[in-house]
Length: 293
Length: 345
Image 1 (cartoon, chains in turn yellow, blue):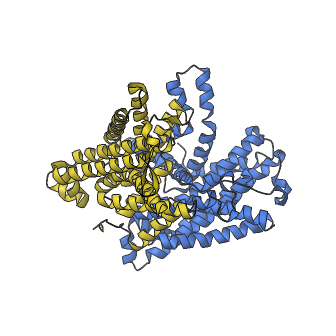
Image 2: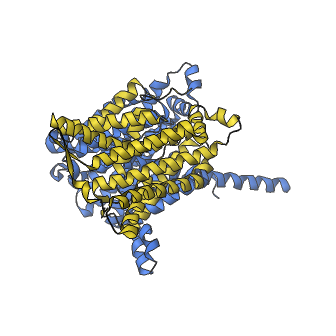
Image 3: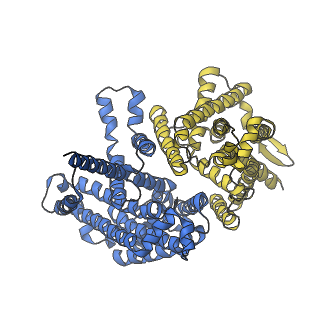
């Protein structure tokens, strides 16, 4: 029973990290049709900004310093995403394949620049001392940092849902995901919604980047690799453009991966991939996606 | 600017010189190091061409193509090492099994279209990469890669002095791939592939089944990729999991875009240039340190990905159609100018 609790909670913690990567991908694809291969780069940029904040500005590993670094990392990645959108994506209006290709190019270039400047070695990210503690639930010892991941993901889910449901820009984004042509035809400036989505997606990925750095022990330009692929898998299973779908799929994948890896070590990734194929063959639009007209 | 009439025989002469260069000790073609580099580049040219059949001609954006390439490599290595087959029969069986594999994967993933298809192929590709790199069933030797048992390789493929045979092997695989794809794209099925890319609905209205034709393209591309994989195994001496990764497929995509999708020679040139660039661009770092360029610039410049990524972005933004597209545009504007001149006279 305690193993069950332990695996479930660490699975939810992993799912929280997947959600942070996937939520922005999902919104960007849902609204703009851009398959963003540079999303992993947002994550790395966020992690580096967070690292800079916590080592060069704060010089302390207090909880407050970590949380502020995390938010600043998110803002840094958001601004980076915004610049990329303004500089490259808007110029390739409606050329979806080209937009995806340009993001591949950005991922290559920025990865090489960061690798050239900082080398590909792992740089330690200072974390608050209580990160290595565990709490006991029943008889299971749960690492405390997982709760921070879960809380952060929940907070961002709340912020996303709040913005989408209760603000004007959110209304435009939701309408745009459903039918962008109609929104444009009604004379509403969708471009601002595009920028907002890129900033928010970059923000979530940046925050996720700092947390993933804490989870993996440090920051490197190569850290995004498998997280981006998992982000794609979550988005596709959850349904493109659906934030709730991403949250459910991220949980599903995080928990599945932890359980399979516990019982058959090393097979977790493989089962997740098979799960993706199965979902797509039965329901190509994903669990919560709408069938495109 | 050359007229097409003259450029075709010229290309033939160039190819002939390249082919006999190593035999008559012609310039850099006589150096084994250069022969090896060029052999690898030729194979990437051939591989990019097989991807062009999928992406450029049929409009299928697959992210799992590298798996068929790796499958050709690994199956050949496994049959040679464990089943003690000769190299050529092992390669033949590996190519046959890969064609069945490509048909199965294609049949499953082609039930979806567009971006979903890209994602399913990415998933299949990752599954293959995981099977290879985690060493399931102890066949693949995991992350370390699987070396080909040199005892079972014909002796003329071994040793530095014999590098020219590897060069010719690569060149002939490139030629075989080129003619196979030329034949396929010229055939009536090939016309249907291109029609599917342009407008799938119209093809089905004409009474043709898009699924069957897409599956055929997927199967042919996968089979030819495994042929290139067999040659790559002989040339590099071992198979490694990185050949199956999504990064390899993305590199293929870059090659095709660089050279220009839709044209056969564009994809080949793109593949060759990409391969040469990624091995040669590392020399940049030496030049950068010699000339005391500040580290802010020399660091990124020493990474081939920086230059390649930058070129890639510029091509997508400003020169859609890649190198071959730019060539055709230049040629068109040249002839337009010439005909205007004639009119003026």
